[in-house]
Every structure is written in C-alpha cells, then in structure tokens.
Image (cartoon, rainbow, N blue to C red; front, side, top):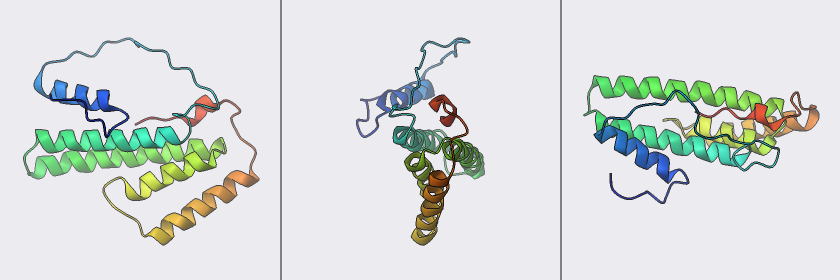
Length: 152
C-alpha cells in the first residue's frame, strides 16, 4: 500500500482504499463510530467541503489505478462524477437551508471547479455572491447543525 499520503487530511481513507484494491475486504453491517455534531464542528462547516474534495481525489485515483484507459474507465468516471455532483447539490441545498454561507460557498466552489470540469471564475464569484446574499436574508430552516452535513 505504501505510506499514508500526508497531503490528505483523510490519509487513512486513501490508505484503506489502496488496501482494498489489493486484498479482499468485508463491510460490516454496523457503525463503528458515533459522530457528534454541533454548530462549531470543523467538518460541519468548511472542513466538510475539504473532505469531499479529498474523497473525490481518492476515488478518482482508485479508478485510474483499477482500469486501464478504456471505455469502462470512462464510464466509471462519468458515473462517479455525476454521483458527486448530485451529492454536492444536496449538500449545497442543506448549507443554504441552515445559512452556513462560507460552507455553502466552499461546496459551490467544489461543484464548479472540483468535479472534472471548471466553470469560469466570474460564474463562480457570482454564484458565491448570490449564496452569501441568500444566507444573509433568510432565517435558518434547521436550528440543528446536523442537517447541514451530507458527505459523499
């Protein structure tokens, strides 16, 4: 597997993905960790967008390693990227509903630049301005921060 890639905050996730590529693994049907959510969570705000970016890169790397250049690799990438875009849209919706402007802008940037294509910078800046304006003028739909998190 090699060493942990310290460029990732999720270095252990990258390592486990590489391990599963080489060795059989089983998924357990129960949760091994309870994750407490509150308004101050790093992962509930900007950290979630960073984690989503890293997961995207980790899975893209796995697809590159597992499939030689072929229509099959292209199909997996298209499906994966469509899935990511849909999940990011859901996350953006949740961030808007809870008025987490900075987190919503981070998700918007990931959607615009980090899913295999890049929108023009002017479009991204305009989208961020609209997000900030919308978050300033609305009351949160959910007072509980847990409703703003939607991981990939």
